[in-house]
Image 1 (spheres, helix red, strand yellow):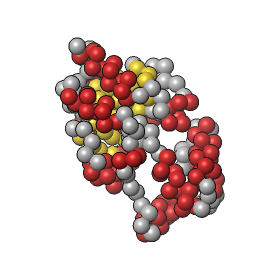
Image 2 (cartoon, one colour):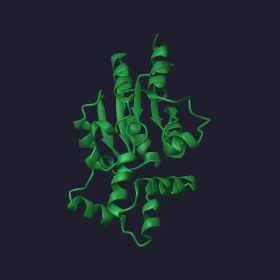
Image 3 (cartoon, one colour):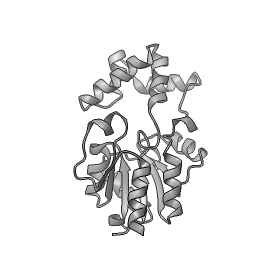
Image 4 (cartoon, helix red, strand yellow):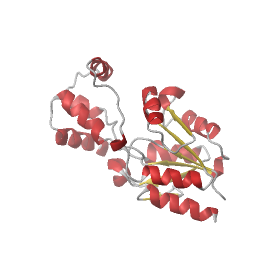
Length: 212
């Protein structure tokens, strides 16, 4: 069945989390490699990556720390260098092929504006902060299905996280592509995904080939 729309997760699909965690490392005054190791440690246990901050400070109020960072001028930021190199070419190829391209994931509403400021080749951008519902909740993927300009069996959701992206997207009737990128994407499998790819360039090749 010909694909009509492709919707992309954000973190570790389009953007690298490297600088995000480096900024937290600087805030907590620890070496970036220490923070990276802690993030890997909690992810290996199936925990939320924010638990890495609580290892450093067990009594940490993450919301309060985030507000303190913002007050200090160290709040959310997103730069061209945060994008993986294959992002712009792959999204542009899909749009040029006539597909509707969307971007949405678990980020606060500020990120929506930051992503739009990057002028990515996408038809629409949204975040869980805007929608008021986060992955892996079924309501998030119902919103994706209503938002995307394609029938459910002809809409692909692309992400690195099997539990947060692939399984719930499939339950909503969407097709799925598991991207082997980042600490979760590289260390977990999604055997039920329609495609498993090592890059967005590979995914664009697969989808566009089906259009011919």
